[in-house]
Length: 218
Image (cartoon, rainbow, N blue to C red; front, side, top):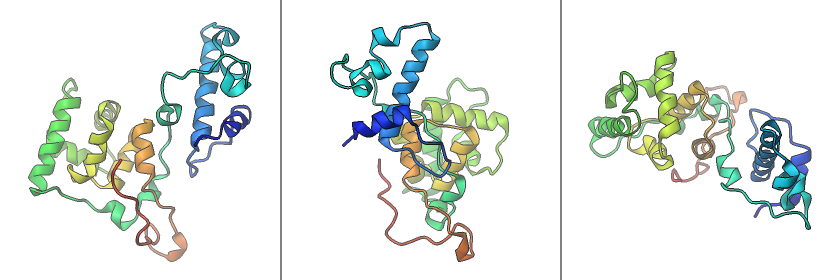
């Protein structure tokens, strides 16, 4: 349930951005409406005539024109993934191979490459695409390939990188960071599996608590 009083508060007083904080849905809606208002100004429009921001019912309250969004703001507003160390724990680093082993994983990645990278120079094979995800420091051309993939891939296929493509959650998160991908459908999903590091425990990634991982489904 969206708290629209909170949306109005965030519209006028947005929280300061912080890399270790996931914005609430209310904050994302307020951010989206603020962007619509600002974009209108930049293109020389009239926010009052278009019912944007305080001139619409969502922010301005009763008596204003009804605010209409053509998309779901909390699911489409750009997001930053949480810091990479938040995926540095054993289960997030685990690679899971599908039935059929590595050949099946390579075949899945080959299908992704054929579906979403057909027009890309030096389109990678399935095994090569897997190597890009495993690379700790991909080159700029390799990052461009991953960036293109993340811009085109359907969200369910992104989720299946882990179960069908043999790519770990850590590798997925690392690729999002290296390509500076902020696509909400991808970032919202993977942020669910981030775990705050606990360096005081004295080993990489901190301690993982059993039973805390949500189901690895959308």
